[in-house]
Amino acid sequence: MDVEAGYTLTDPEDPRYQYVASTRRQFGELLHQASVALRESGEEDHIDAIISVSRAIDVYLLEYGVTPSTFASLSKGYTVVRE
Image 1 (cartoon, rainbow, N blue to C red):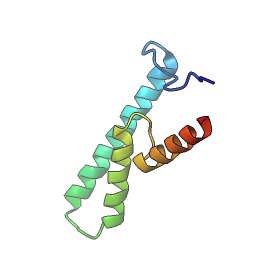
Image 2: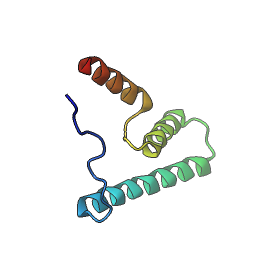
Image 3: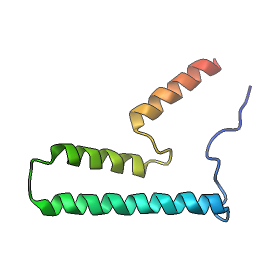
């Protein structure tokens, strides 16, 4: 059974697409502000915050919005179920 799946919002003129793109841009700006604040603090004891921001940046840079390990796990499960 073939299921049409993928990215549901593909039309840049769709208001829902614009909303999601705007929200994603705002998230990216927040991540930038957080990274600048951590860099400017000059302290090295913010390891947990640095890890959290770097993971969030990792998710931000991906099109599907989840960590690579989660995506791989879900993709593997999907493949197994389809077979």
